[in-house]
Length: 404
Image (cartoon, rainbow, N blue to C red; front, side, top):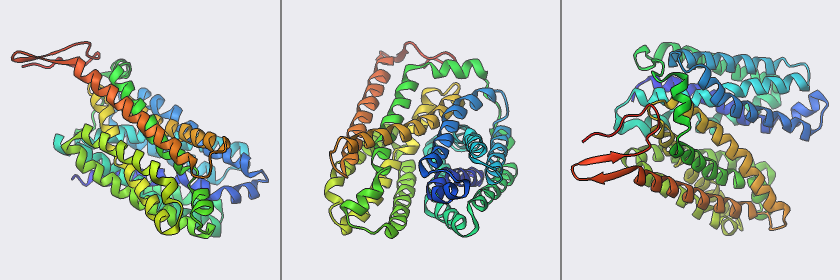
């Protein structure tokens, strides 16, 4: 694999760290800015809103720019946003800085996935995407705990300065390691990128992402009360258990990349089926400490097996102009975060019990399987075998018909 993938992974590590570290810093931020914890929680939402808006917007605006230049510019914006967070004088300015920090998130992963797959042979595309995502999963194991610890001992502002330093390191790696010859601008331009996004298969792939990862966040958003109230762990043990989730996510991400290079759709269906099964068993596994810990690890593995296949599927459906669709998939991941948490919370509010969000997540995973199945059906109808040739119909603008 090209060494340039390391540069993408470093950027992903910084982004993953700043995305999730705010959860652990909320009490410190609330105390320092003299606001309530629920008000501080809006800082998490501001970042997510920045991701959802910035992913398609920045990918569209930069459609005709060199992708290498785009990646560096996005990481510069990331550094500026985190530096402004560190020096924000009040809650309003911190909200704006967190929104700014979230803007480059989706576009970086979207454009980065296009660059990563362009540097490797076709049989290694999924693995290249999984290696970029490796930075995101490792952030949950090392980056977030270290940044949280830094914030608790040196103040939350020091955390964002530390994340800015990671961003500067990523800029240096991108400038040194990303080659110019694999990062030319999309030949389709903005019109072609938008036309590719109008394709039904692209939207079905995005829908699979929302449902599939919504299943994860329906349960993961409420995993702490499951571990403490149902399994009997102390609150002090939760941090270590969440690190186990990161270990499982890292293993699942690498496994999914390897398997998807052999069978993209088979890996996707297998991953969603495994996720549904793990979530359905969660109420049983959360009854004891000895079974709850491996359950958390299995949840991370089953969910992130589908990460690379979902990203690659969206890119393949919009192969004539993949940057905007790939970035839109990152917005879909964050919509899954918000939507899944809402579904899990609704199950709790309805009084179905502490582990009910996991069952709600299992239902979302089954929904994801249904959407993926619909995408498969549409693909079969769009490519109809004929005698000695392949006939295609209603191909998206900018793509070429298949030839004998």
